[in-house]
Length: 217
Image 1 (tube, rainbow, N blue to C red):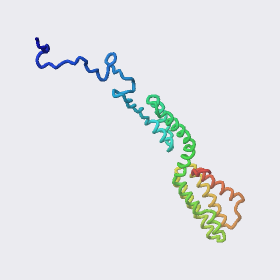
Image 2 (image 1 turned 90 degrees about the vertical axis):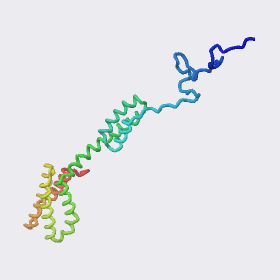
Image 3 (image 1 turned 60 degrees about the horizontal axis):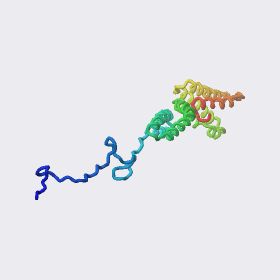
Image 4 (image 1 turned 30 degrees about the vertical axis):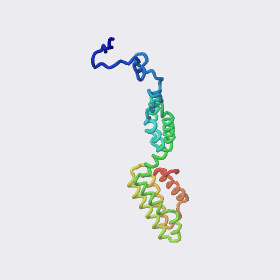
């Protein structure tokens, strides 16, 4: 009886008549045969998070805080970015709209604030706050005290006018100072004031308010 021999020679491993299936199974040209979205273990593959849209976030932030220039700029960039990453379009539009809404109030308040920061305007408003109607009414029964009030206010307004960097504000302050100077002269002479002096003081005070950027004047 002949003994079967291993034709492959000594040390060769026995061959399995049923080779293990390729894992994962490959389709044509070596492409894995699993359906899209599934891993080799049969579980859904993790979905990659869409790209972020930082431009849209920045547009919203600037739109909320009033940085309308950057809000509009980043909003446009955010819309372009949204076309690529698929997110942030609504946020970018909200930032743009909020930024546009800020334009009107900023355009109104900024010039007034710049005028109000003028050194002459600051000094004039402080003087007018000190020598106001309440003080004049309190001193009306004391001619000397009332004259002193008018004279002090006139002197302080003159000093405030010299501090002003705004020609319009300087002219308005000087005009109001001239009114009080005339009023002091009336008290010195004991004559009746001009009929229109009170109306001129009111009108010139309004000019100071307007030139110095008083909100709502």
